[in-house]
Image (cartoon, rainbow, N blue to C red; front, side, top):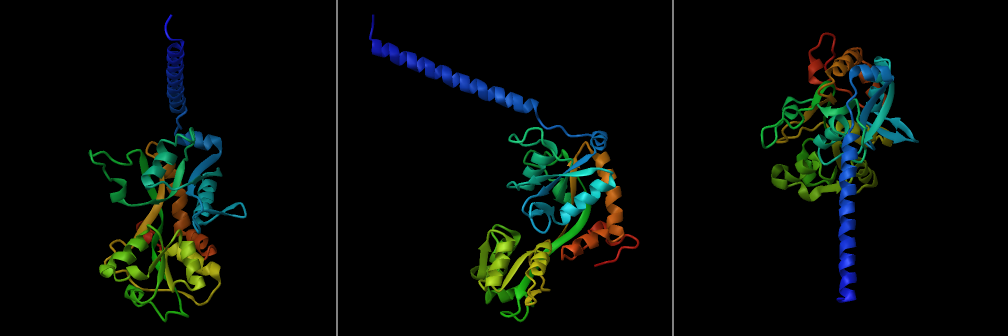
Length: 318
């Protein structure tokens, strides 16, 4: 008859194996369902017929896109509203949590979608670098990294900026002064890398790191650091929000930094260039007629036209 204990043990092992196979089958089935539900890019005609333009903007990213008292705010939100209205559409915002790289964000919101958000894609994404080298990057096997993305429509030039407290510093004639004055920067940012490496790292000991430019600025307000460095738009907005006349904007240069200014634009799926052309037709008069500058000014920010518009007729150089 055999050992009944051994029989029960073998039965339990069989049941366990069957359960594992069932779990594997369910996992495979779920993957198939998710793939079947893969997000679909909406053609231009479908977007117009829907009456809605879906625009991806970064969440919790003042002064560009963020929520204040539950309402969307920021220059990118204002621009998205103008673009949607220019096409006769209502605006639907899709809030982007940044991935490790911009490539991840473009994949998740423009051409493939995320497995946790099946069937969710934006028609348009803002604050994408308008840079030929970035657009045509290739991977290790020679394939275009973002071959399914069309990047177009530069709408702003961004650059780096230092703000300082004139109660603790007279001026910032050069970044070299931060050998003697502490400065706050966002962790793992370009200012962080720059301030800890330039001039053979002589400012590294005075470079303090914070989770965001806002927290670095708050540290300056509390007297923990004498200055802070971030993107110019962020610094402009933070200085304006503070209402403190002792926070000044520095005019120093950034030696050995490489690119110190860059243009920002938009992205759509590569197959949706008709949408890109229509959006460019809305964007161009916003820049040429000064509406973009007014949008930025309403948020306490300086506006600099992208390089594409610097030499256009009627464009005022800034």
